Length: 69
Image (cartoon, rainbow, N blue to C red; front, side):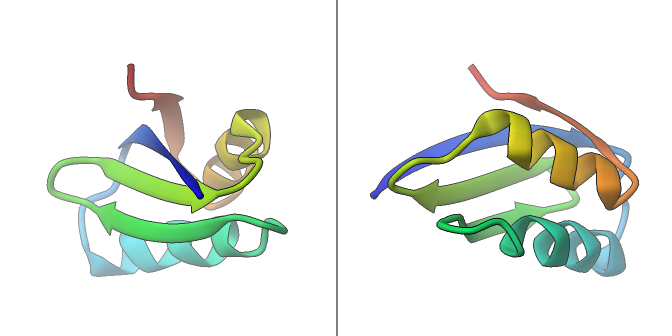
């Protein structure tokens, strides 16, 4: 399983983390490993993580994200 890290903006609390976790967890084959509002970090794992789908799921939760490079 490979991991992919994203930077999420707009998260401020545990509820924000939960919203992002719920949306991204719905993606097939993607496992949410970490969501941290204080650092803006989202770490996901999976065999074939589609970055565009993860970014869309984060947007659906009400936040914006970019791949951390």
